[in-house]
Amino acid sequence: MRKKGEIDFWDKEAVKQLIAETCPSLVEGTDPVYYCRHCMSLGIWGTEIGDTCGKCGSTDIDKATMEEYDALYEQKFGKKLFNIS
Ligand SMILES: [Zn+2]
Image (cartoon, helix red, strand yellow):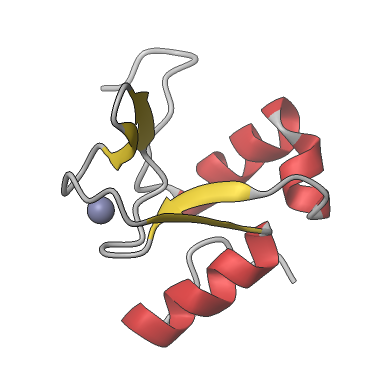
């Protein structure tokens, strides 16, 4: 059982809601997201050698609006992650 306040990251509605609450500018598409061009992960770390993907270790990082990211994600995986629009 999940504790209250914990987010189930497989629950896309919960993730979407969390993003909408914490980063409304992301959902509005005014702020870019940083993503790994290799595996599309959004878990990017800033390190002394530059931005690094926390999932695959790639340093091939790019930024896009949430909508652009979702379009790229769909191209790669055949479905959208956030499906905002
Ligand atoms: Zn990666």
